[in-house]
Amino acid sequence: MYLTQEQQKILDGEKGEIMAKVMKTLVMYGDAFEAEKMVPVTSKYNHLVTSFGLGVMSPVYDLMQQLIDAGVVSGQQFSVDPRPLDKNVPKNLLQSLVFNKFMYNKQDFYEGQLKSLGLMNEDAFTCACYMDQVGNKPRKGDILSWAESSAVVYANSVLGARCNRNSGIVDIMGSIVGYVPYFGLLTDEGRKASWVIDVQTTKKPEAQLLGSAIGMKVMEDVPFIRGLDKWLGTELDDEACTYLKDFGAATASNGAVGLYHIENLTPEAVEMGKSLIKEGARVYVIDDAELERVKNDYPMIWKNPDAKPKLCFMGCPHMSLQQLKDWTDKVEKGLKDAGNKKVVIPTVFTAPPAVIKEFEKTPYAERLKATGVILSYICPLMYMNNPLCAKMPVITSSNKLRTYTTARYYTDGEILIQITKGGK
Amino acid sequence: MREFKGRVVTPGSVTAKAVVTKNGFNTLASLQKALQFGDKTATCNDQNNPDLYGKKLAGNILCLPQTIGSTTGGLVLYCATAMHRQPAAMLFSNHIDSLAAAGAVLADVWVEDASMPVIDCLGDEFLDYVKDGMNITVTEDGRVIVE
Image 1 (cartoon, one colour):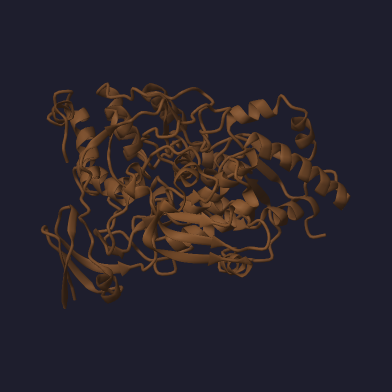
Image 2 (tube, chains in turn brown, green):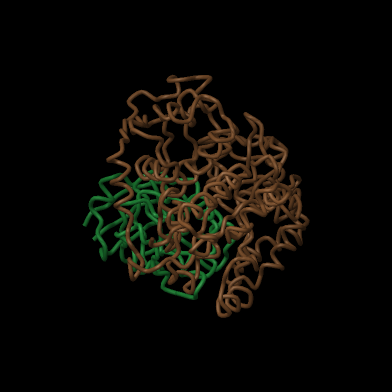
């Protein structure tokens, strides 16, 4: 890899041993992809994936402390994934004890480290940092050093920024040095599609299911998706962006998609059209039957498939302001139709802290509260990943949560019926 | 016995038994539970991966096409190595992906008392040939001997 004089000096230790190790990490990372050079990070803010103070992940905190002790901190401020704990989310005494005293006993310590390293603010804990209320929204063409699969795929696809699927720890290292290796999704060639997806469904496909199907098929390749503009339109309005947020998260977690193009909708597809498709690209046709097949193939991992759900999580990735308002309307109507006053399954909606603050300024907040739905900033995935919660029958419409935990996937419509009507 | 030649991502030599997945290896889903709850054998907990679910990963050579899933993947591999619960080596049939590369490099640069050789570009034929339990020897120059 070609390094500038400045970059070479850092690698040679002119800015200290720890900074040299950070640069060595980035150079080796780039060498794995035959990166020819490093390019400057141009976004205003960074985004980190590691938000959790898990006691057993001490190697992460030890490494972060080496950076802090050496004064090797980020020139960029950053947002970070959601917190793993929220006292408002239902848990029993044992769970509470295990979460606070054992699992996440490094949370306060780690949040202190994040502040030292450049955390944007106290509300900057969300996987959906690109929402207006959070304020970490890169510009088209910006070079990022982000991690968090759902945020990376959104930034690349919907915003037109350029970011590889960086890992946690590497995310902050690119930001510290101010450069990232130039390969993959940073390059024009790397942003071309090697799959064409033909959406031929007879109704608007469920975002999380369509994303899952595509992710499992194309893995880390770039798909060019035709036929979805019929359902989403050709404007990146709030509804389309919300759909693409959930769709993208499923492509990234059920596969390894870092960028997708939607014909006539996403910025590069609008600009360049079919010229984004590589010669010899493979084709995957998705119709109603294929989506049904994908859904039916999800493994059933509840010990008792007929167990009554004890908890429902919505908002992985975090919900938008409009989503919260829409779901308030839906839940109210569902309850009215069922003759119920409150949700019949304990239900948690999750959203960024800054979105929750905005939501609470609207009349919807009281209405949602009246339905019994709990609003939280928590990361459902972090809440679920322990043996106590793993045994609980939890339902969700998040395909990301389904992938990483024992939560069972239902479509949005099915979830609404479950939480408002239950077994009626 | 067959010998394959790949590209060295992080060097090292080791001999151990193979565990094989034809599907993408979801690092977080596979290893998170093992790391969180003191499972020194790093038993795979990814319900979506029937090739590996319930199998011991620590100390075995993981043969795979690529890793998938959460961008915590690299730091999970780094932590597994620092905690001495990593696979003995990782052998990729495809070109390595960015998350696995990050994990391999973080482990190589920042962990001093453990290692995890990583070889990629071994080809589809490698993954077709290798089966669970086969003995594999990995050499410093990227040769992989399967018997």
